[in-house]
Length: 267
Image: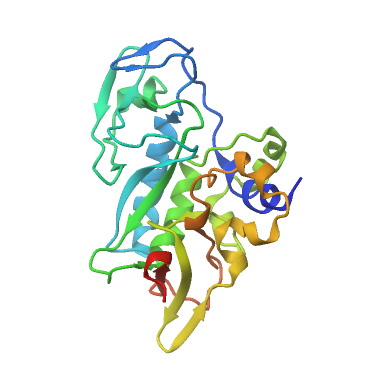
């Protein structure tokens, strides 16, 4: 398997929980799927992610808030006006999606009992999902490392990352613990910035370190088979926005600032 499929997908994308989508052509409330299965997620797993966030928030991000986020995966995917629903066996109700494509879920015992899914009106594999954990009041173009450490844990617990490569499934059993995986010094959990990246810098007190090129762009600079590998990565249309972080490196405290310089702002 090529490098990006091993370093990115075997460590990250395989963590997506295998969902049981509704048959093509089935009406899911106001979401009608025709010709392809929806890119849906387990409501139960997403609530488990919310529970994990509440448990770990005091340790990693005491002031932060959690939202879920929708992102494009395939070229040409229309991410405007996505309709999102929680769909069970006997009900379906809409979920409000904000202009920045983030949303929250209400806790619903009936949805858990019916093993409901969170379903957008988009075809399977055309989009992907992430968590967004943000502490308010940070400077522009800045994130907090503790927030991102918690994003990794919640994202894995919620089984959000989408994957198409069945060859990675055998490795997924090794990575079922969000704490174990996200505590690795060289964890390859894939993060997405808001825009195309020029550089990412870690800052803590007087210590400053610019991430190496192989921590950006999903290691594409070290992948001669990139064109063949990209369909197996949910970074396919966001390659220039991706980055890895030293999540398990305790020498960087949770208050470390992750500072982005974007291509359009670069000198």
